[in-house]
Image (cartoon, rainbow, N blue to C red):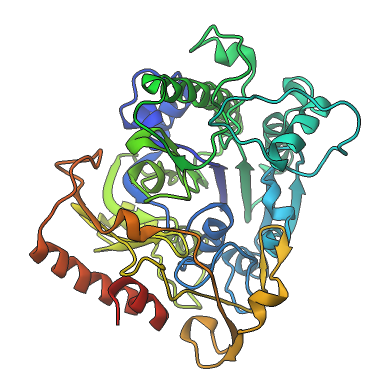
Length: 488
């Protein structure tokens, strides 16, 4: 038996033809309907990139206890478990955050790995000489990542050297070399279509004829005015995203062709997925981290090919934390630890519901509870958005460690259920997210999928609040979270 996960970063569900989009050119994504189950109610868990990957390893939510950070010493990793059970695991990725201090420990769980350099602000090319031109659009980022990316692009000239090309070339080479072997798992990660939304001109020409370099294609995460250019900027960024998505689609086609040529359909579980979506002007937001996690961010596309099972649409509520249990199930390995996630194979074969409800969110932001048809987006009960703590044994974040001042009030605590018997640091944290101003939001996703009309119903809110509390208890949420969300 073999398994493959092809993971695109920042893949937006409503931009794909599989979910009703009629203007984005993505025929190879549409091809997935022929061989893959299409999941209609699949959600992310923890946001953004690295928290999502901890969910992928552990089958548990990262965001309830900790922000962006490494794989913990006490974490179960499904990748490590596969390796220890004699299944070769290989990672091919250009997701440069694995190389940061805050991304420590994830790729190390694989038997072997290949890291491709250069996307976004990956510190690849030394910053010497004349500074390259950078877009001056007033909604685009202008920081160090942008400058680093400009220098990287001077080295990665042409499509053949682009990270996406290198990722897929290595993936195709792996399949050519090892398709005849058994008992392996291949994880292919493509950083695209993550911002900056920069594609080759032949893909851009599908949507625009502009040659203007000062266009909105790398937005600052923010809420913006409804009056900005009569929303023309939103149209522009959607086209630039679409161009990069069409480029991803082209490489997906090459990957699907290889699967067909090597006849891998009969014995290989194949997943095509993403970590989260993105706001391209909807609700007057750009980005993914700073505001409420609306459907455009949280409700993600997901496709799964299960050998010798006729594909269909899957309506059941599912999410990222289900992937580890699915891999164990497919390779007939026992569930040795308690996970929040459940096997998607059971959903497909038995047509059962594995979740009555789910959670998703970002540490310190809204805590989101989904029990269809409702999504309840619970904000802070106080304007300080406190209390908030980080629970970790590896006080690292992003590309740095915690500062001395951040650790001065840290304490080592014991008997914390989610730490699996390990003592763990409890570190008070400033909250940079403002879920208080936006407040609590309830939407009926059947009647209002675009989330334009929040429901004001005290009885429903109280009912969903009680359900959320029970769900948080099931997932060992810290006591401080209840205080932040519901008050003392």
